[in-house]
Length: 169
Image (cartoon, rainbow, N blue to C red; front, top):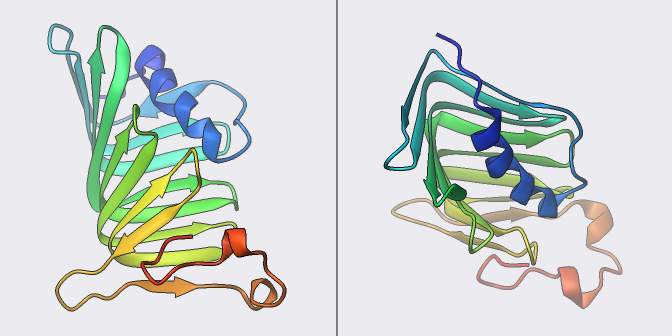
């Protein structure tokens, strides 16, 4: 079954616009199954779930939207992997994606990877702050944090874009 719930999806995707130019066009969601618990403020999309708005796309096996008083609070997506893409500007993946609307953060866990503005960050967990564009990566077990800076960025870059030892920028 394919489901379209533009009011919930629009609430999900509009706050992400802080990370790049806002995408244009309608919001579409498709999945094999959907469940809405209106009293609890929960929408669950399962089976090849996909959210699309303009050039922004989220693919996951399961996407859960949590609302309070009609406003989106949290998005949880799981998959192998979950993918968030916005044209060529942003590519992110992990087995779990959590979007905290109030904090304006996206946290990817389990083999997390974010490529933004040409730089890549990898680790067991990667947190991306949409407001500040800061990235925090942490390792876990045998997995270490990895940061790749393109060659052009290593010469003459300003202090604002220099990563710290903790893997933040």
